Image (cartoon, rainbow, N blue to C red; front, side, top):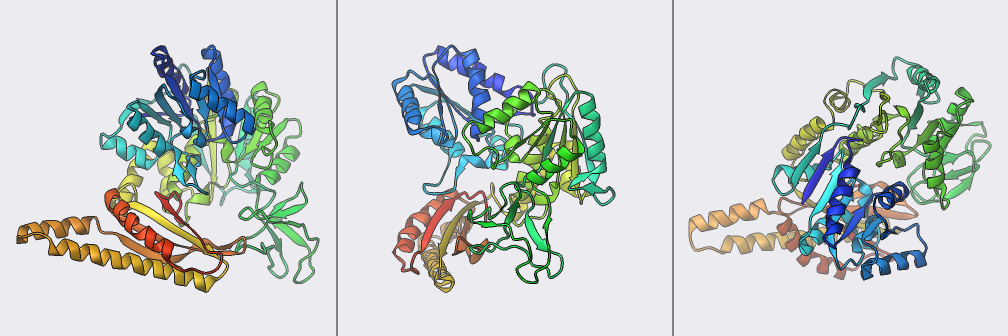
Length: 537
């Protein structure tokens, strides 16, 4: 098991290519996983230029017949390299010799609906079972992967610099408390965009929020357009003349006046659509492209946007997290990150890790070749320790500090979690069901503790067993309502299962889940178990 820890633009893909070439020379096949469909075209093109043939693609954007043909080619051995998103981990490859997981930290490798799995973790298990190496590559490895490397379970290989004349971009914070902003763009950011465009560079403006504005607000009475089916606000999509819920998908026409007092409504906040509009007004001579889920929904749309950027036709690229994942834009010299504060005060314990990864990854799109790069991060909290550490010392320093905090708090990777998520239309019935499930778990814990205390013939042996039982003890926390307690007309809540040892968690779940399944619940109850959840929401 290998961790390839390379700064953005350091040449990780070239390492993959050379290692894959060696595997193919021995008659083997290679599986390459990427987190997003958007990454596959440029990666496939590079692989096909390097290798004469036998490259197949597997992802959800293909037709059924295309997926079938790719699977058959892999199964027969005609396809020697499979490139795909998370579902590609299940591809039949009789001569599998190597697995590569690019951007291993990315949350897209986790399947959250139906059959829940982590493609990264399954890749490690599949490689172990097949006796072949696996390479986990990232400029911002997950804290779990870094801990595995520190513990000697993974071999760590470092690419600390960009090749040739390329240097890391210069990063700075823009204090929004001191600088005026026009629709989310500060004066220093606008000046920098103008300078880089005049110098012939391309510019990325990053905002991890799609739509025109996150809410439609009445300045007179305070009414905010709600979703009728969720405990959430509707997002304004001005171009489509719709209000959309980004949680359940509900849509509604845009009202012209307030439903409560009849006064005019105002869009509040910025999404990528509004930032696009502002940039087109401020820089009318600079062709612009936008890349987010709204613009990328049509088949071929992602590739069309990327081609515009690579050809130089688009001088400004506005987008969401789709921009952070491994793209190589040689002419981009400036990255502006808007609203970097979204993850600073979130309730989920992984929020700061995700924010640090996102900032580092999107910043890495700048200055990847000879021309120097610049990154400007707009924030209301420039003194925040996370931002200060990222700017001054980089991701590795942040990760070391975050791991120490996790160790002290007893959070993963120093504990093991499972989340029992449940939803139903009956809020009281849902709460009763989860309380009953928790009670069953408490009984199992007491039974396990009693069994442990009655075993052993000596005081020393009994003490040792009690210590081991305590070390592997299972905690059941909750029930607690989800962050968005009602979504799509269903109430949502969960139980959190926590222990220090994976073996203890597995034993507990093996005994507990059959009992949970036998419990009577409210009509329409749906529940699932998520082991190693990425979000505790």
